Amino acid sequence: MPYGEYPYNLDEKGRLVMPPPFREFVEDGLILTRGMEGCLYIFPLAGWRRVEEQLEGLPLTDAGARAFVRFFYSGASKARLDGQSRIGVPLTLRQFAALDTQAVVVGAPGRLELWNPERWNAAIAGTFSDAAPPTALLQTLTV
Image (cartoon, rainbow, N blue to C red; front, side):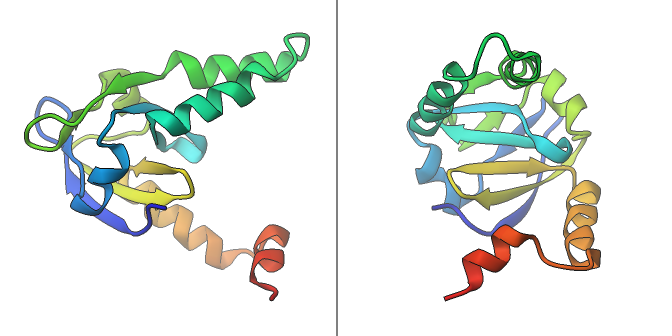
């Protein structure tokens, strides 16, 4: 499971060096797509296949499900690490996530997230400013 956060720069062509702790996680290829809260999600190919299975199971008659599938699929882009362990981030995805020259690569269960540094800091700060922790977190931490 990937974890940690790593600030990195994007080059003038929109390429990002994958942090060493995450390279094995995506060595067989990856899918980049739009994520929640204005970040990008990076799935290893095997993980993306599981996501696709779940999306294929959504009812075609549900307008919200159709909208989400469009959001997720239309931004999807397949990539592989190049010889210098970089991935190219398409312009449309860089614009969506407000990525210019800097990014934060973050580990999450089953995926990586690619954040604009200011958005990342705001998301983390927002977690601490909430009055109460999310119910799911409380259930996870209760042993």
